[in-house]
Length: 90
Length: 348
Image (cartoon, rainbow over all chains, first blue to last red; front, side, top):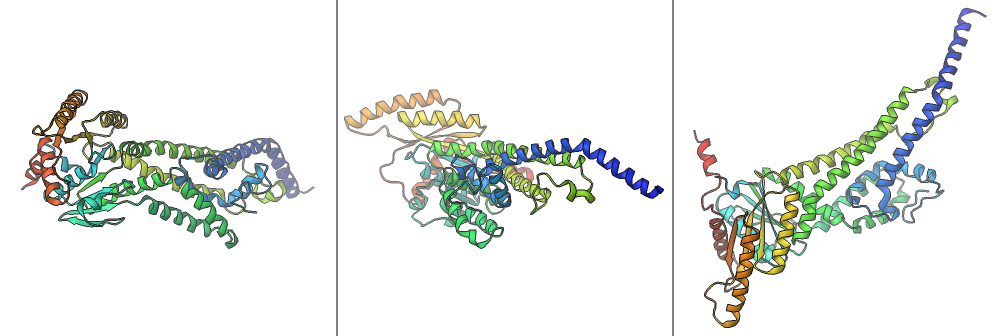
């Protein structure tokens, strides 16, 4: 094996090792972030679900920004279709 | 030293039907006479401002007298406008087939509890911070007390809300950064896949937009609260009659104003029977009134009190209002001109 090839292999191993070490953490952090974001979504869209929210007037202006996350969110919450009769996104 | 009209914002509040609009109107006319350009704002959903001045006012600034304009806030229209803005920005993001759903959903939001209140507060806050360039003085003729207190407490409650929401955003952002530390080799992204995150838009830019919206909100609430609690800017004037229920309600209101640090300038005890009333019936009423007057003097000893007699005729028209206004200012112990000593100090 020539030196450049060996270097390439070495790099690959190093990467693999780093991935083996990092992935579990990355997964955990990504999940934590997702949970955080899901909670945020719930706070913003709670009024739609019939949970009274005294701040509806203000959450309303955040809804456009979060609209595209909406589908992703309700599917992850275990609901295949939008849980809201009046707000179907799929 | 400091004159009531040197403030920038005066709230006139009290139980329904005790004479808030009359008091506010009288003060506003006096302020106008004193050369303060004044805006008199009615926040009561059942507006009576126009009736007192005999001018149709409505939801736009309408001249009432020299140096004086009136405005009757229509919270429904404000809410409508707010929701229309949201609708517009939502529709720019989704496919046209969803427009109907969005309309229906936002119609529901319009009727949800608190929306109209929030819209009213929003307009008041905007006036408080923007009207400065056009008016020296804002006088709010508020709705019956309970409602007003709720309104005054909203900035505090909502600051807490927006802080909480920003906290959520912040935690989410920190996790994003952490995710970058465990960063991936981008050449291998396909092989190892992406966990979480949205495909449509990088999370960073959306988080930024959310943050912007929330920060703008919080700034607004904080500013409103800072103005409301600054004794050099704001004064609250209570109006009541010498009767049991108004006294009780006034006490509650003052407690709450104290709790939210809103400075109180004094109270107007309205509609007192004059001593010369004749007839046994009225004399008896007057005796009872005296008891309540004593109670007011005891309970509110720490506040400046103004006593106004019941008039033989309705309060209607500028002349009567001016008379009342003069009486109020005199009893508050400030017959002088506003800003007198300030002006003297600034003279070259």
